[in-house]
Image (tube, rainbow, N blue to C red; front, top):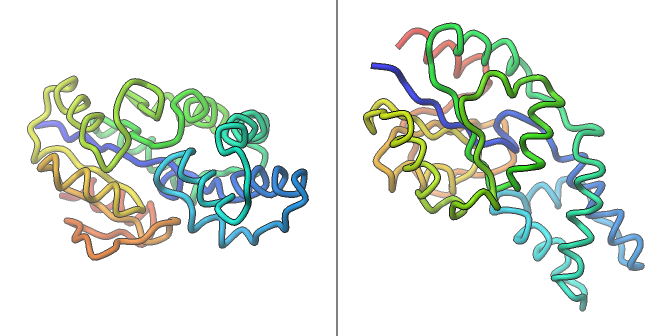
Amino acid sequence: MQKLLVFDLDGTLIDSSDDLAHSVNLIRHQLGLPTFKKEKIRSFIGNGMTKLVERSFADAKVDLSHILDRYREVYYQNAVNKTCLYPDVFEGLKQLTKSGFINAVLTNKPGDVSRKILDKLSIIPFFHSVIGAEDGYKLKPDTEGLRYLINRFKIDNQSCWMIGDHHTDLIAGNDANVKTGFVTYGFGNINHTKPTEQFASFSDLVEYFLHT
């Protein structure tokens, strides 16, 4: 039976924190607001672009719909300036693909910019499907996107893994009755959610799947 590995994007496959923080701080600077340290903005990541903007401008009296539109414009222009793959992601995905795994991405980042980033970083050929916000599915922790992938590839639930760096990934996986993997090197936190396995690096993750 083939395995379906569904990966989160930010904090799991890519370190996008510099570009996300730059976009937030550029707008804050333009509005005359103090900028934030990257670590603070990292803590706002995980529930989609709207939540990131809400959290990043919670201290200011601004029109959030206008800021969201502006953020989308700024971020899309700067999405792959400093964003990079985590160590061993390229080679690891290559190995998983060669070994017959079905790889997919399920992210709360908008799908169009997600695919742009994956293409720019040369890893989009390793994925059978890339689903993001605004692609017609509810955001994680809702299971809608995950269930679609399970059905599309006709995979038994116990042959599917939801892998990410945030408790929203784990909740989605648990609610869809699939196995879950938590990467400890990312942006998010486990928040009392129990994963099936934890991985300290992407190479550890690849070794686990190639030998189980």
